[in-house]
Image (cartoon, chains in turn orange, red):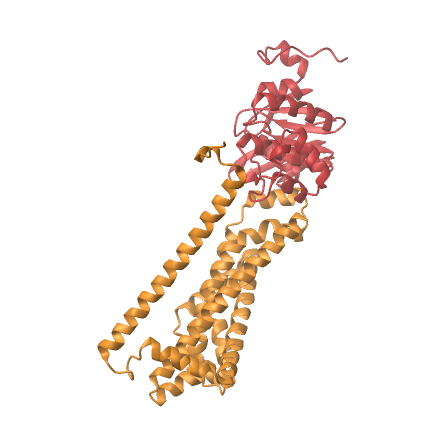
Length: 277
Length: 215
């Protein structure tokens, strides 16, 4: 008879044990996140009950039902798609611009000297000032794209700059001596080092792109946009609609953030697999 | 290979001021106190530093073991070598010869100091070279492995130029055909002797038997 003790575990038992430990941890953190969401929904419900007027603070259930009702209409999805298009477009342009400016500044000091004060000024300037100016310069639909680019570019710029500064000069010198081709350096040296910085920029940038982009839509009022729906909710005192559209924005921001992060992760995994081949 | 009237300054500090040294085929060990400029000489020979005056001639294709391991930490030792242009089979073979076959797939960052040193040497030996520069290649390597690495360097360096910087007399005794004692900065050659003379001077006391006369 084989007696199993903790010390006589086979490799297979150890592996399945560690997998179930990881799964347990994952479930634990998911449960904690769900618990936190439920807690804040309860706080919201209590506030709504305390105020006692749906016009001021509608209950979470009322908002959820309204969101469900809105989502049954095709125009809801069209409106969401239009805003997503503008904001994701602005976000992507900002990622590209931030990366280019950081790279230019890294290899050519005068470029950094020129870019740095611009980024500081953009960070410190109120979003509303940019939106008002952009309304004068651009067509209404372009304002939210422009504002998303403006607000998110400094986030990518500073994160990618930090990533570039974190490169190990010794390793780069080794790559020089061993004449490692640029494309291999990119996959094996540059990208793995940049990845955490780029991921952080994406994670922060998505939220800021939504905040700034929707604000621009509220003020710019393009024909099909979530901003316009928020503006109309305010005009007609439809607080439930305001909450429902806001909830839609939060949900879309979360989904897009998760999608972007998953995209980065799978690109990194593919690049690592390619490197191994 | 020849260092011809090499000059090198870092701000106010002059490391080399007209330094000249001829190195033919074979292994030359550079001996000298820390900070005298040995590593700078290797870096100039590797083309990683530009001399302020003079030149390094005839180095050809250079391979090098740096003073630090300089392995990409998240890559395995095998991938580190492949990244530097070696084919996988040759890399595995070399890792086997430095005693790292079993650890070829482990990330370099997880290896011990001595193992990383051996992986760095395997990488350098996998590259075809005319000149091999070794900057303290055995630091942290245990006795048993050290002996086999000596043999590996001897066979890989046959007919090539090998420039070895080491503070350990055993390394010079095992590998060098010629020992150059440096002082500085600024660098100058205090003594330049064949290995046999090292034993006669008592330099290699405790480093084993004197070599057989090869002439």
